[in-house]
Length: 293
Image (tube, rainbow, N blue to C red; front, top):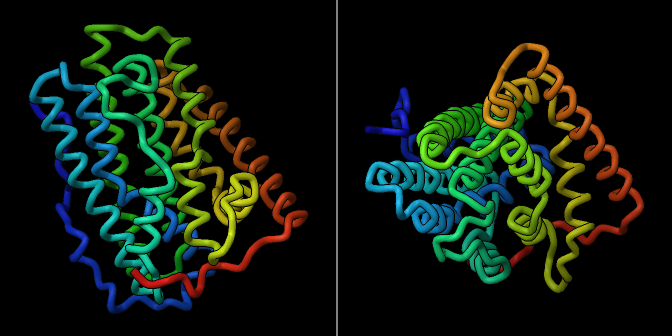
C-alpha cells in the first residue's frame, strides 16, 4: 500500500539549469522570500523525525510514506538553496546554523501538538495545500525561466504531498474519527500560525545584518509586505479546492468560492497591514554582507 503517488517526472535538485539563472530577473523581495524558504525547507529532516514519532504506532506503510515525503522535502531545500546561490552570494551555511540554533522544532516525543494523529493530519493537509499555492504564487511572479521551473516542480510536489496526507487522514478516520468542528478548529488554527517563528526567524536572518535584534513584529511586516501582494484570487481558489474537503467534508462550488473569498480577504488584510506597519517602522538594512559559511 502506497500513500504517496510517485511524481509524473521524478527529479533531483541537480536537474535544473542553475547556470542559466539571470539574477536581475529576481526583484529584491522575491529573492528575500526564496532565501527564507530555502532555510525553512532545509529543516526537512526535523519535520520527518517529528512525524515519524507521532505516527510510530501506525505501522510500516505510514513510516514508508513519511520517509518518501521526507526525501522529497529534502530535495526542495537543496533546489532552493542552489537557486538562491545562483542569484548571488548567499551565506547559507551561516544562516542555517543560526536558524537551527535559534528556533526549536516540536519535540520528537510521540505527542502531536495538534492533540491527536487525526488533528496532525488535518494540519498537514492544510500546510501542504497552502505550500502548493505558495509555490504557484512565487512561480507566477518570477521572470526567470530556471526559477519558474524549480517553483513549478515544487508546487506539483506539494500537491502530491497534500494527497498523501489526505489519504493518511482517511485511513486514520476509520480508527479515530475527528468531528467536523474539530477539523475546522485545527485547520483554521494552523492557518493562523503561518507567520510563526519557524518562518519569521528565518526571514529575519536573511534580511538583516549583524548586529541587530530579532523583532517578530517588524519581521512579519517586512515578510508580509513582500509576499502577500503577490497573491491573486485564482491562487486562493486553488487552495480552497484542496482545503474545503478536509475541513468541511465537501467541495461544492459555492463552498469553495466562499472559502476562497474569505482567504482572499485575509490575504488582502495582511498585505495592507504589513505595508502600513512597514511604512511606520524604521527597517534595518538587508543582509548583503553577512559572513560566508
